Amino acid sequence: MALRSFPPGFVFGAATAAYQIEGAAFEDGKGLSIWDVFCRQPGRIENGERGDVACDHYHRWREDVSLMQRIGLGSYRFSISWPRVLPFGSGRANEAGLAFYDRLVDGLLEAGIAPCVTLYHWDLPQALQDLGGWMNRDTALRFADYADLLFGRLGDRVARWITHNEPLVTAEYGHRAGVLAPGIRDLRATARVIHHLLLSHGLAVRRFREQGRRGEIGITNANTSFEPADASDESRIACERARDFSTRTWHGPVYGRGYPPTVVEHYESHGAPFPIEPGDLECIAAKTDFLGVNLYSRSRIEADPERSIGFRAAKPELPTTPMGYEKAPFALGDFVRFVSAEYGRPPIIVTENGVCDDTAPANGRVDDVGRVELLRGFLAGLADAIADGSADVRGYYVWSLLDNFEWAYGTGKRFGIVWVDFETQKRIPKRSAEFYSDVIRRNGVEA
Image (cartoon, rainbow, N blue to C red; front, side, top):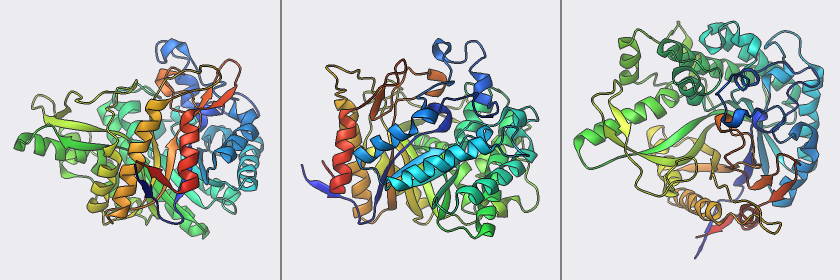
């Protein structure tokens, strides 16, 4: 094996999300989120679990920062709980909630770890959902006010901001399929949600610029590296449609290209046009400083004339993880090459990449070899894409620092490089944490 090095100044970090780790769901004035409500609906979450406690990070953040320091993280990406700082989504701020994030940011900086803040990672205040949530244009305006509050409170210490995490998931899984909060199944609602999420992003970027804040701001989305299932024209065309619906719907408007015609036609043919008002697309295309990439695998695409979208995912060819993702470590390098060519080689930050591996502790250790080898492949492919000049990638955040509440799966799926015993809250750094620490120390990966 040879060492594949990363450029000088490349940032290595780990990522988490508020609802998945914080717990303290009803403490210190926090308001209800849509996930607090969704988890209480029978049959929504495996084993009826809830994120009320999760990893208890709200109380154990100092221990977790110490773990980050031991691993050698240069940055930590976490999300703000909107209902913790604005219990009703707007109006008077909750000082206790803001103070928690003050303490966390200060603790990270004292440990030499740069904070990276995600403003929205799916936990909308229930008070706003009661008014229509992301289906309501007013929620985009409330998001801009919320962003403004956080920029003002933390902007003197936080230099990297992400507006939304995976808005595709909020729209598709929260409002079309209905398997994630708020659990709605309505194609017309989905079109409105897509547009209002993107509009809220643009409005927040404008507020960031108006405040004159230092640092950088971008958006991150759920990405898949799509491939035609075979060499036929039908599969090639279907693959491009998959990219339209998954990648270009979200990236196109951000880069000033608007929504793909195939996607517009699909929604309009179902009586669900995007609710675009004058100036919206210009707002959504407000200049960003980087593109966030979340990626876990590839998908082979084939035509399916019986589906209105015209395509489907072919059966996996490779072994899969417990999440059903193909073990395709080359997918990360492939995707950053594709998205770089598609959008003029923007600066990229890999904001999530990781592996579900349920290896349990044995003799006080968690020997998650499968995760280590997949991470090795992901990082090697990424390093190659940087080295050959195909992509300008400036950072990488492994998902996730901790085993956590994995949404509809409850605690049954483990992505962490640190094991969490959810009964005792004991943390055990896994073999993957040792591997990642070595990558950071050497600024390169042996592969």
